Length: 186
Image 1 (tube, rainbow, N blue to C red):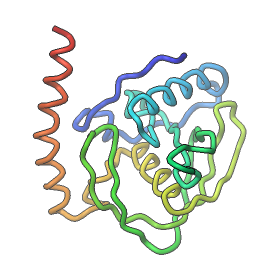
Image 2 (image 1 turned 120 degrees about the horizontal axis):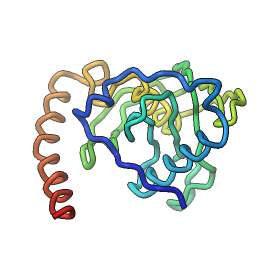
Image 3 (image 1 turned 90 degrees about the vertical axis):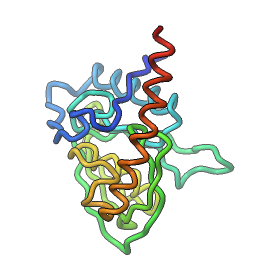
Image 4 (image 1 turned 60 degrees about the vertical axis):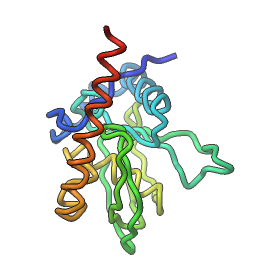
């Protein structure tokens, strides 16, 4: 079983960092182990996506489930690990609730295109392409944003009022998170 990595919370400077590409020399077993740790961490926190900067690594890699493949509440497709992804977004814009493991319990309506074509490399360096729709495209776009230092409530994604509402909600929520963490330590 892989280690659970520490999730970074909003205001951690790494979450606003534009990540560096995975280097050719990094593909292979060590990257495969990191992907396994990302998966364990994502599943432990009941997420559907997790990007490397959310665990303190400024590299262009994320992992995601395919929520569109869920049947009776269970995911049926294996998760996808995307290294150095590119996204081409298209289609009508859909508004849906989004949340983030880096700002737990806070959700907001975010506009995203319905379709995404993603080109990426596997952890072994194999080039791939996948077309994603609806919620799958949303998850990929959300995680891709993390690689570019963008949070889902960034003013490039939501209105100024929504951005401020998320900031206020986070101020209340982070006290609970950090009080709970310090209680476990002491």
